Length: 142
Length: 408
Image 1 (cartoon, one colour):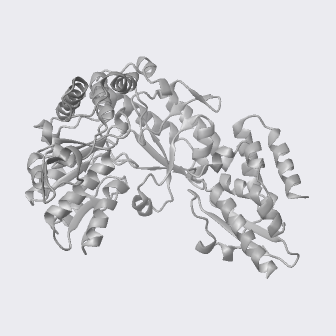
Image 2 (spheres, each protein chain N blue to C red; image 1 turned 120 degrees about the vertical axis):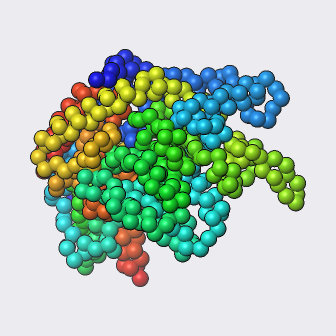
Image 3 (cartoon, chains in turn purple, green; image 1 turned 60 degrees about the vertical axis):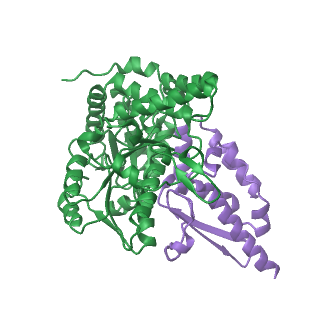
């Protein structure tokens, strides 16, 4: 499944719900399926700044040339949000990650979380994931 | 029993309350951050910009005189509201934070000593902590922090023990923005004065809820913001005893605060202008006067009686929620309920409450050292104002229950 297809799938899943609470319920459920970060990576080095809750994010470049993310958060809504990002961006090449426009966030109505003044750090998470991709891109080209 | 305010009628004059968010009627419980504004305050601002706007203390023209008169009348009115002896003991600032920075800065210059000591409490807002901390850090001094009791009240034994080490100034909040604790500022001032130590009281969380009589408290400085007391943002009040304000050097320079300027030297204007550099927020000052008059018209006694009902009813309802923990249960606490539910992050709870139309604050509430002291990352805080209703407290409790079920 491409990143675009993953985004479409998420949009479809959320479109089944009208009520905000139902959407958040889905988000919370999705957070339970997150590829959980290895406890030894749950350190301050992997902590993302700018969040009211704590978010740890780890990335590795495997032999298949793709980046795999794992994460965790002490807030379940935040964990749900990062799990969506992982669904779209994990298991992709650095180029794919850098070129993906994350339009699903707007489409499922979570745009408010993208405001840089919002304290949940969705913006910081995206930035951090793209930063990892950039570093790995340089690595693979050298 | 004191008369309760007619809350339904009162709500009619707060247009911001009559809206829906996410399709649900707004329940505004973030009054500790800022209150909504009554029409009288909004109209006062409008009126100023429509008909009275001119720079004050400068012009010979009609409008300038009009706005200058209104501005000085507002100063007298604020002075009367807190029972200050003289109107020039009232300095208008941008808010509580600027007022504390002003005193911390000018007091530091005045004292001009190495290793200064400032006594605060563990429940201070960052605004009454960081300005003092930076001063003592830069001069090899010490910030002394009086601890709290388990119910969130001040540990007076500890406070008095620290007072014996003769700090240069005591800076203490009147009401804690997180715990709702009301500190005995009159008694504290009295024991500090007995040792010749001046006292600053941060009244940001008090002025909307309880009458403040500056002469009764007898503190040397008292500060508060307009926007937490039904007034506009961008205006605050610094009360200082005349003897202190006369003694302290100016904080900022330029504008109305000068007397005579040459390229070689400047002499400064008298009180209160010495501390009011630049053009003040005239419209906001006038609207602050209107906000305080709204409070007096409603009546502190009625406000306190109603808010006390809201707080105790809210506590009672919320205490039925499984695994709830309250922070701050001191007797006579103000209209603030801070809580967590075991195993649930306050951010999650706040986000879901928001989606149910309930505005609360989550996080550390600009009191990180207090959160460290309590050993928690943050709390959910519902802070009430006179326009909140018992029904809203019921809906808060229902929503907290519902959110907790979703998050478990």
